[in-house]
Image (cartoon, rainbow, N blue to C red):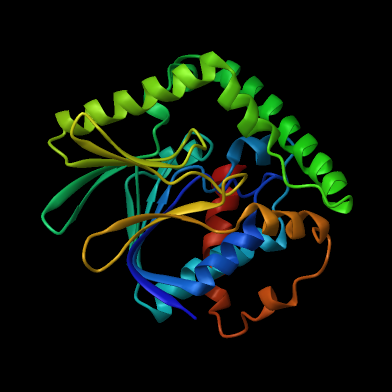
Length: 285
């Protein structure tokens, strides 16, 4: 059954990277529609596409679904650029119909102000030492590859899902300290902006909590966490986890199987898609 929301926030999809769980995200968006869709950075992974990534059919399907939401449900789409899709800086700010692309955004709802940013500007490694960030990205993608192979092995033996990178982040003190500082910095900046809350992504760590009187919302990612933020028509927010660990098992075990459900997109305006793909191709290359 479809569920209609006032707002949906997703981030860190990393289209073009092998670890992107695009099929799962497409399924999620086919079951969850909204008035406003906020794409909060790192939707397209320009770093991976420039290096060794590939644009696959499943990535195009995500673009199709978003454009279909705009056409069928009159959804307003706000795309906040992140560090992996920083090639968008060349065209910012941009507004075409119901699509807006920007560096950050103030979202107002039910008398509250939400400061929306991907969060990379609060990451000193990303902003000041980009080459180090890209080296770290290579290591992270290797860890995701290892995690996938490891859990395919575990799934075949009936063992529960085990996220290597999440466990490492939870155990390494510097990583825990970095996340804590990141959250506090964002909450502080939202207060300076005279906002009631901050909505971000970037660190692949979904969260919903209060920090010094500011509501901190992190939408997580669609590489490991598979999470999104949703707002209902009473102004209440929820952190939605797409699948439970037992279902992640099935996803790994059936990773290479053809998903016929995702081909049911025949009622889509192909000309609009080609326009978007041409724009992305020019900017990435």
